[in-house]
Each structure stands twice: as C-alpha cells, then as structure tokens.
Amino acid sequence: MKKILILLLVVLSQKSLSQTDNPPAFIKDSLDTYVSRALLEWKIPGVAVCVVKDGKVVIMKGYGEKEMGTNGKVDENTLFMIGSNSKAFTATALAMLDAQNKLSLDDKVQKWLPDFKLYDPWVAKEANIRDLLCHRLGFETFQGDFMFFDSDLTTAEVREKMGKLKPMYSFRSKWGYTNSAFMTAGEIIPRVTGESWAEFITDSIFKPLGMNNSLALSKDIKTASNKCAAHTVVMGELRKIPYGNIDNLAAAGSISSSINDMSKWVMMQLNNGKLNDKTIVSASAIAQTRIPHSILGNGGHMFNKSHFALYGLGWFMEEYAGRKIVAHTGGVNGFVTSVCLVPEEKLGILVFTNTDANNFYEALRNEIQDAYLGLPYRNYSKVFLDYQKADEAKKEKEYKAIHDSIAMNLKTTLPLADYAGEYEHDVYGKMNIKMENEKLIMRFEHHNGRYGTLEPLGGNRFFCTYNDPLYGMKKLVFTVENNTVKSITVRVADFVEFTPYEFIKIK
Image (cartoon, helix red, strand yellow):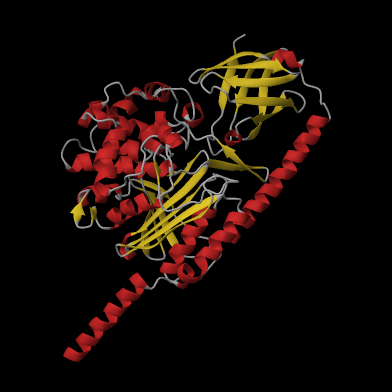
C-alpha cells in the first residue's frame, strides 16, 4: 500500500511538472509560425502573446512592428490600448470597496450619485451598482456610443445625455452591453474614496501589482515611449489611424497596458487575489466579479462542447469543455485584445493586436486554450479568416453595385441643395449638411473633424462614406413630405453602434 501511494505521488508530481514546465506542442513547436503567418494573412502590424500556467509565465513574446512600415519591434513591454478589458479593473475596484465595507454592490446608484438619471425615473431610483457592472439597464448593446465615443463631450455631459436616451428594453429584462453604465460606475469611486477612477486604479491595482508601465487614461498613450500605433484595414488596405479619445468613458475602456504588466494582473486573478504571496485584492472581491448576473444564452461552439454563456461583473463567463472560462475582449480605435482565464487549470492567456480589423486575437486564444485542454488542433485562424474573406467579398460586391448606381447619376427626389441645412437630434444635439465641391457633406456638433460624404443613390437615398474608417460606410435615407425634407436617419458602423439616430431638419 505504501509503495502504491509513493508511486501515485511520483506520477502526480511528474504530471504537475509536465503541465507547468513542458507546454503543449502547439506552444513549443508551432506558435511562432502560426503568429508570423497571421501577421501577413490578417494584415496585422504587431501582436503580443503571453501564457501563464500554474503561477509561471510559459511564454511572453512580441511579434511584428509597433507601427506599420517601421523597424520598431513589439516587445513584452510595448503598450496596447486594451479597450473593454478595462471593465474588469473597474468591477474589481468596486468589489474591493465592497469587501472593505466602504460601499455595497447592492447600493442604489443614487446613494452615491444623487444626480443619476435615466429615461425612466423609477429605473434610475431602483438601479444598483451591480446593474451598472453587468449590462442590465435595458439599453441595446452599444446604445449611445456613437454620441459618446471619440466626442468632445465631458464625462458629466455623457452622463446627462445617457439620462435622456430611451432604452430599447425594460429594466433587467435583457442584457445589452452599455459602456456608459461602466463610466457611471467609475464615477462612484471618487465619491467613496476621494480619488478619481484613474487614480484609484493606479494606486490600488497597478502599483501594488508592479504594473509600472500601464496607463489608466487614453490621453497618455500619445506620449508613452514604448507603444503601438493604432491601425485598421479599409477595403483590403492597412492604414494607421488616430488613437481613440475615450477618457469621457474611461472606466469602460481607456487603459493601455503591456503583456508583461497584464501577466501580473492575470496571475493575481488566478491566485485568488495574491501575487507572490502578497494579497492585492481580497479573495471575496475576486469571487464577487465572477458571480453570474446576466444570461447571454446557451453558449455553443463551432467544434467543441459549450453549454452556457453568462456575464458577471466586468467578465464574460462560459462553460467550455467542462471548464469555467472567465474572459473578456476589448476593441477600441486600432486595437483588439483578449484576456482569458481558466481558473481550474490555473491558465491565463493574453493576446494583443494593433489593428481593430482582425479576429486573429480570438483565434489564437482559442488555439492556445484548446492545446492546454487536450483538444484537437483546429486552425481557428484559417477558419475565421475564411469567414472574413467571404464577408469582404460580399461587401466588395455590394460596394461595387452601390458605386455603379452612383455613377449612373440617378435622380434625387429634390435638388441636392434642398437636403442641405441644419439638423438636430433630441439627445445628440446638432448636425449640419452643406454643399461642398458639389457634394453634400454631413458634420456633427460633438465630433470635430469627422464628417460623412453623401452621394445620391436615387430618390431620397444616399451612400455615406465617413472620413474616419472606424465609422464605416452606410446607406442613409431622408424622410421627405410634401417636397420638404423632414429628417435623415443616420447610421454608423456596427463596431461603434447598431442603433440609428433620426436628425430632424430645423432650417
């Protein structure tokens, strides 16, 4: 019996050693080739990858360039904007204050923000902090983001306009991803601590973890020394674009970080709030963020078993191949990133990219995750790229048909000059359309420098091309009654917002 026990301990020890110090073949033999190929196929200038297992860094590596056409190589300390991966920091910060009995996550929002308003005063009165952190206020996903994102609105003005938006659904009836709700949650922190959201995140999380290069606000990445540029792909062409100006929504997505810094965040998350045996965040606070609050659906996976999808506080959660996955993604001008935790396996995966026009960041995460869970190699990058190429081919065909229509000079219902004028949306504010070089140009009050060029498609339909590729290209329709323009319904790329805005012509 004693010999059997000793043998069992040896086997378990060897198993533990092999998992920690002998990573899967994909990591050892294929990762470099996989990523290098993706840089070309997906038109990604730079990628950073980190894998943490059993409290140790298995791999931490940069690939490609910080900026297209340069020799500046991505390394483990290169900053990327992490977008909505900032949300877990905000939720963790508020859970920390809950654990310290400085607030309760069940507190009504108006206890801390008496001026908090929503379209329905009863909902504003009843909403609690958890509602802000799990996207259940009743808004459609991204509703309001066109107004807020990259605008000149202050945080106070965003809060004021958020309070006037009519949610598409009733309170707590449907999950809808709401960036302005996380911004509102961040505004509670100074009321409790006397520190701004950015100061609290820096002093209570970044510094204790040794995340010394991380930046809480988007404005600061411009002057950082080791940073990626932002990029996108438009009609197959890779372009450098400006950084997102999103500090009015800071708590929802303004953090910039590196895989080196974020590896410490991940190791702390996988060790119940401890890093190097030092408690940074209480275990109870970590647990609070992983309590399911919103049901997203039944889950599902293209190859492997997955049975449910949920949202906690700043984290997506799902069951996948018998494990609980705690993860989030982040998308902001020129960047998409992934943070994935598999707590039962003590596994953490980070994938950062410096273009917002790829699904490779999720493909690589899936590939690494499957490798560690002993699942078959699927070549997700090829699968996702094939989907994207098919979608691009479809769009290219649609755009060709649209431009063929434009070239036909189809007759509009009214003379072009009649569509020009001053317009107003009851929440956004003002917009104007002017004739410039014989074309209609649409400009928005709160988005200085951003405009849309309207080209006629016949009748009252126009094709709008925004000068900022983030906002895309959309068909827009004017409402005309009795030969008079009444309004235009404005849409932007789904990456920014799904919901339309009706601007009424006022003169």
